[in-house]
Image (cartoon, rainbow, N blue to C red; front, top):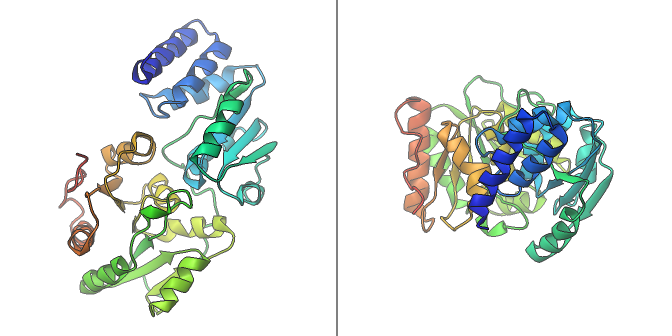
Length: 318
């Protein structure tokens, strides 16, 4: 059966099970929906409510990278005593969960898509393992937000050029930073640039260093960096976990990435936020100076006149 029909079939089977108050069966069907679309209708919300009413003991699997983990956190923080299995390419996942006080019974790591598929197939064969539900938003910042490093109350723009290790080709060029600095020179503005150690070295090699209005955020503990995203009034960057963090905090977020076909990415991390007016997605066929300047100008326009641009991207999906 076509996967698009499957997800609807599982969804309506779950709804029917809820009507019968068969919560054990309902959560199994909702878990199947999660394999295709975490946010089909209100499936994750209903899934979470059904789990609360189900007396059966199940193990929940969280799969993917930091962005995937972030969307799973609201459920996990509400259900700390549940049994969790994490399938991830994020090598510091065990430290991450320890830092935020969540117990995970087992971790399984992969380095590429082939390894992920092999390990995931094994996990899904177990009848007692369910895919964890997700949420689009945090009700509050799950990490310590820290203190603003700026001595003024001007607008703070967060920037992250990097991307997932698995999809590092999504990273944006450093030239984009210079375009942002040049464009935003028209208004009093502060920048928080998030980076890892290798990205920090690259910035320094291009003579981009801290100033009174520019701070480079690089912590070995990613929870510290993620917590500081809440200090931003606006955010811009590639399709990365930092962009997801900003969107989950409902911070207006501008995302720039080449328009490659990736249905899962669009369903889980882009389109719902675009529909809510939280993310402004730019997906050109190719990223060049003209595209980067357009993103910077549109972002500046949004800051100066919040209702001046439409929530739909100027570079829509083809």
